[in-house]
Image 1 (spheres, one colour):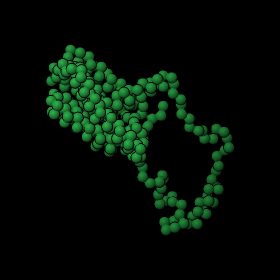
Image 2 (cartoon, helix red, strand yellow):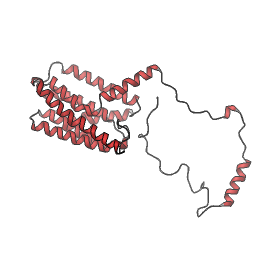
Image 3 (spheres, rainbow, N blue to C red):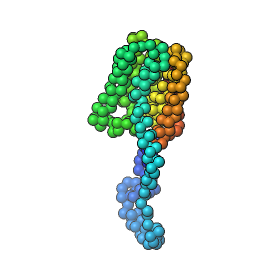
Length: 269
């Protein structure tokens, strides 16, 4: 299984192995004499024996086993189903089913869910597609650290707009703060992303866990809330493991994402 580590380590500037001592010419130009001496010395160096065992062997990637392919498939599935853009929608659906908002009629639920999905899913996806057409984004999955700045800004603006919309529609304060906390977490992730590829997936699912805890404390929870909280925590663990398995993040990047998403939603007030 290939591991993507392109964003884990800083790029090394300059040529490889360059110094004033091993340059091909002199400091102020070419030095034919030095080149001649170098050529003479190279002829006197011992040559390796012509034996098949000394021949360089091509690097071959070990193919994945059936089990590894299955795990990778599940990991990809979780990564796309639990993409960060969907977390505001999932959070609102859980709020309607597990809190005092359970009394809301189905028409109202559909109305608010479609608006939240339009603001936080369709608009960012449209902008990402436009950025890809412009060549500013190479991968729709935004797996490259340097590709995430503009999408982060778009997502933050959408979450702020959703929080304002919910506030003026009279939503409970803990639901308004769920979207506002998501925006705060997005700002933190965006800043960290300049130096380190923190996990947005982990931050998103951790925000859902924090929302369920806030519902338990402030939202007149339904009896089945505890079951959903346990399920969500388990899914969060699976999602974090999937991101590490796919090589998109390290364990520490996933843990940092969990901390940012959880704290941003739970402690905002």
